[in-house]
Image (tube, rainbow, N blue to C red):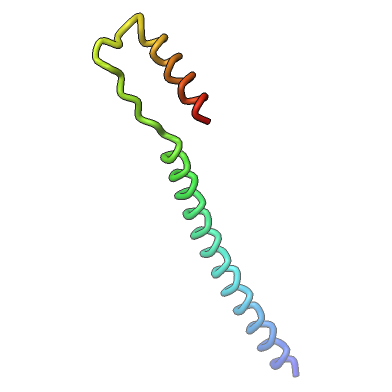
Length: 75
């Protein structure tokens, strides 16, 4: 009787350890997927703006101000 009880407890412990390992692996995979998605969102928010020739100092401020104003009007 005691041996049966010990065997049941050992089986339960083994199953629980396997489940903990499974969920640990799932957590690792989900964390990696989340990090990947966050990175993709950041990349999707990047806009490349090409400055026209001669847009050096001091007109860069005005160029950026005009660019931001034009972009906000489109929204």
